[in-house]
Length: 436
Image 1 (cartoon, rainbow, N blue to C red):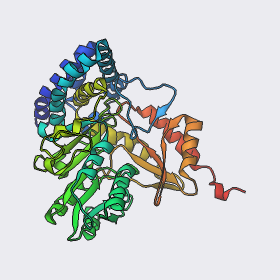
Image 2: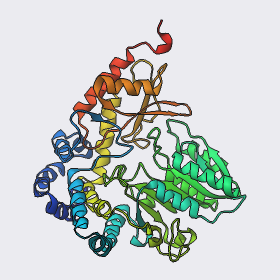
Image 3: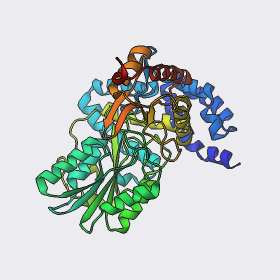
Image 4: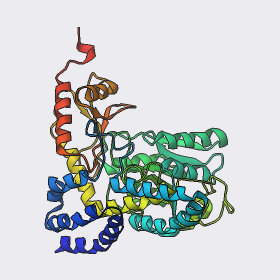
């Protein structure tokens, strides 16, 4: 009954999403009820393994049949429904750009903001719509009132665009950066929290945390770190580029004062779309990065003064939210973790295999990093493409040397069988250092 009640409570969101998606593709919307009626009687685990449902989801994408894309962490393909919405808005804009973009579509941003706020579990007054996580987080990083001698805690496994922004403030203004090096894989909350705790001093103003590490896929205990940092009088920035719409959570669950993500990753929104969140009482503390009438005001819209933008791309975000809601955040997370477990259980014990990602469910989901002792990451990357047309990405960072493998909801177990076969064949080769 608890599960059925949950499904029914989520029905309003699902039906709203279907109503919108139906206006774009009636066939897609019309078949969902059949799948939902069957899935609602299944456990989450059974639903994650239901290939009939996920094959239907796969048909909603236009991915290449000639390449197995397992680098969905960088940027994800959009469902066809999102592409169609984007095209419709684009053609609409071109009928009379200055009228339809600036007078009609621009007014739709408030409705989109409401939809995103519901997804994120925050107030519409705390969200700004922008182009990606880098833009949102750099806006916060450069907008904070910090002075020489103020300290910031961050990790060597944070994303380069953020660490470089902090290094610029360090070089230009004399703030001090205190670095934390996180073990890979991550499997001990207390140990991770203690690393951050030790890095905090009486001069620390900001703790910067990456929720899901893009290099390896390890999930950081962000809320526990944030609670500890708050107890010491620090503010918390959360980089959620890889966790939002990947894991089932709300922004408040992270403990973030400042938060940003890219929507073209796990939400499957148009390329170059993102959002940023600032807790309402802190908006006035962040200067607008670009020109604004009140750059130090308390209105989040000051962060949306981007000049002419792609209104078509922005408006199509709504279709991505609806598609995500139709699947369901919990069901999506379970499927992604199921796919990760499917291939990793068949390869983790291969000769010389090295895993840099935890296999415990609370510490990882879809994104995994694997390497083989004696081989460079780019050698494995090249082999997978040349022998199996599997596309991944090389990761070499500190002690991590492997490839990042990231399925998505459209990925089939047959695709992963191809990956397993290729990894198995690779593991039987002698590393270059052992060859005569």
